Image (cartoon, rainbow, N blue to C red; front, side):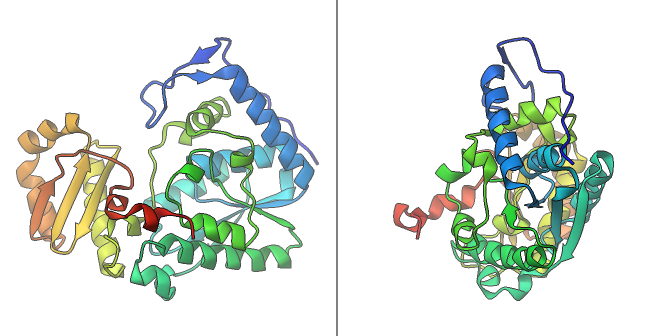
Length: 303
């Protein structure tokens, strides 16, 4: 049975999202409402869907709207694996419980996917192809005709080799179809009561390993534990890039003094205990996808 959300929209023409990461400045409330209406109409037309639900900002918002519009005709599926940290698993399950999503967990191992382990520039393609193939099998068993992902309007302009797998497996991207941008998704998520509205982006742990260097379980654990330590210091947005025996830390420049003056010795000791010989601070600061900086325009071109 179709459900309808009861939410209270801001009365201002434009609102800011405060400290939300990547908020993109002020958000046009009227335009966001129009795009949300387009999304709801699109979901209603699909009737029965499966949402690839990672628990991130985008997939959580899509799951919430699908649940509100389609009720039990929306199944959220989360794939747990080596790249999905335990803390993220707990957060996903808490989201499901809080919002009453119909949900299923799939256990998988990307380390069984050769193209993922070899870690070429198309690593995400191989991972997504394996994931969506698995989801398609479940969807067929459950007689669910449509699989949805959380691709946004920004994503299609970025280097996203996984988009090729989306096309090959006929996965739909309704957020992109509605031209919803990250800032609009954050605003709508806040209005819908989603705790993810101001959540920092949390890409796959393998994205911290340079292309051409094999992805291993040991490296993933090192990265996870190193970033958990930084989070324990109060740093929300950070990356630990794994360059063999060297750890390259990316944080906002405003956090440099905090790290070097107050936590340098303990940080170095912690990272040494994790197996890193050298611990460095990237003077270019935090930026998402920094390992893509080595790719040429030809490598970034869609295949």
